Image 1 (tube, rainbow, N blue to C red):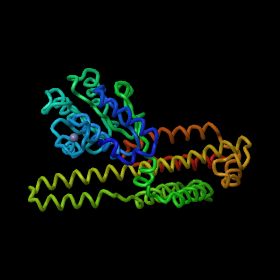
Image 2: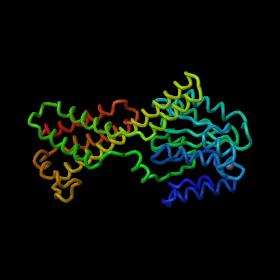
Image 3: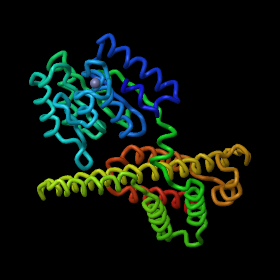
Image 4: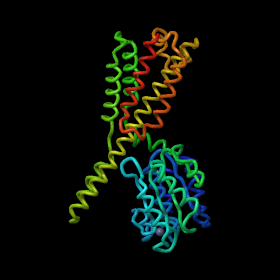
Length: 356
Ligand SMILES: [Zn+2]
């Protein structure tokens, strides 16, 4: 069956038990009207959602070869609608379109299935509108599958109406999303921080900005989009079929937007990693001021440096900066300029030192 064919789900017991539950609900026709699939790869979640949707409507519960299965997997079956963010948001227009689709009766027998990619990108208005549909589904033959990499970002009023399935793609993530050289990256950040903090010119913030810029460049330079080649050949294929110019342009634009979203996600992942390292620094600064031993630190090698430059830190300022970091993590996905967040944090970190 289709769901069991997803080989990347096989080596994790959590995923296997999710599959068992989904297969059981298909077999017994005991489906919920709303699901959330979360996990750290929106593309893999999307594959699961399509396979699930196909299995729901296929007469053989997911044969993979019938008309329903094939068209659902391609995302073009008439009973399914797929919502994707445009730019950084899913807009109200799209939700209204979805409500219209869900409110008319199904085109073909079976369930109408709505899949929303990156549902965390719904703006508040649109989320409230969606909530109304979830609270009061148009009919019992509607199923919503909401996909997200960021479950906490979804309004609790929405998530509480869904059955939540968490999927584990750890290995897939490591291979596909992060192709940063972690060790080199960490070295760049750590050396940058010690350089910045020990700089003789305590009033110059130029080095903070330079460090933020250097880190950003490194992250962007490490980005490699595996789908890009695929996208180009799709455009070529499209051209050969004699598609209209405006259609080709549309396809190109949509691929470009997709690429940009992917890059932003990659940058956010990278910046989050930088935040982890800075947070570890701040913890170590506090620990040292409390008399912790070298071995007790996150990074024991920084012990002497911290002792020299932060012998008596103002702990309230350290805590405040930790808070800033956590807030920035949250806002990162909405920010168009993640480098600004980094600038700001490095400046405050340096200020921490200047007070001593
Ligand atoms: Zn089938």
